[in-house]
Length: 67
Image (cartoon, rainbow, N blue to C red):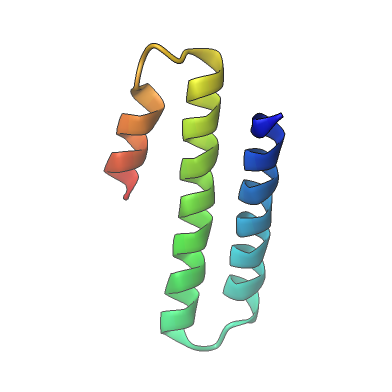
């Protein structure tokens, strides 16, 4: 059940980021929206890594490198 909630949050963050990136004229706001997109991707990566192989930390380590 928690898996679906995290994916919904990630889709929500990604949608807000795409909308903000397309509609913003301010460069700082565009960079913040790009960061939202990257954070949603990191959230997906960590969630799927935990779902498929919870013993290894590959998704967590990759998310740290992306940050």
